[in-house]
Image 1: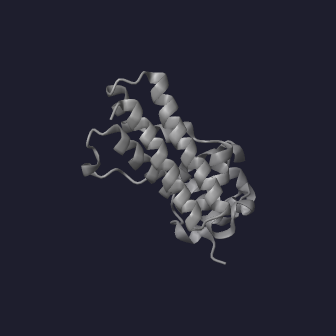
Image 2: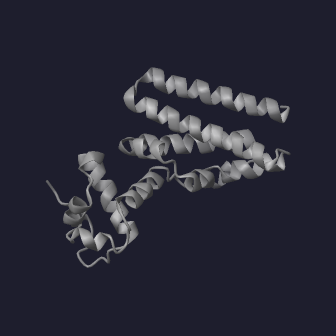
Image 3: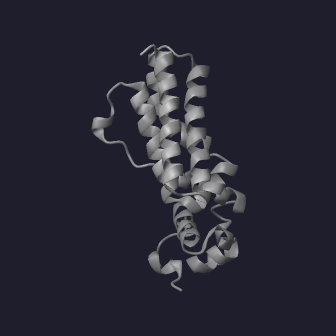
Length: 186
């Protein structure tokens, strides 16, 4: 079994991003149940106590991993077209793709959704919905409903990742977006 420390420079400073990357690699390789601070320290070539100088506890590390699972690829310049529903669709699909790539972390995301990270994914959609006349509470309800739908779909797909669950995701997202279009009067 290759230690994770081999993937990092021996001279690299221990910092939160390095620790999170190592934890992600450990979870990808051995599963979430294998993640302990002691094991992570061993993989990094440091004592577990060294990690606590950068991340206060395992709960904080798990929160950072949940946020990492929701990190989406950057938008492409052609994405911005001013269509709130199209932006909701793009944001939902980027989040779904990120969760699909980090399937082993979906339970963490479900247990403690990283709202700040989710809000940033839907930031452009929020702005466009506000520009279209939705009040702030309605904007939050719309984007939270769609992000929660994506999270729930990812959780279900983890237990049943077949063509049916993918089709169910597509149908549900389409219906949610049709509802938003109807509210926009389109």
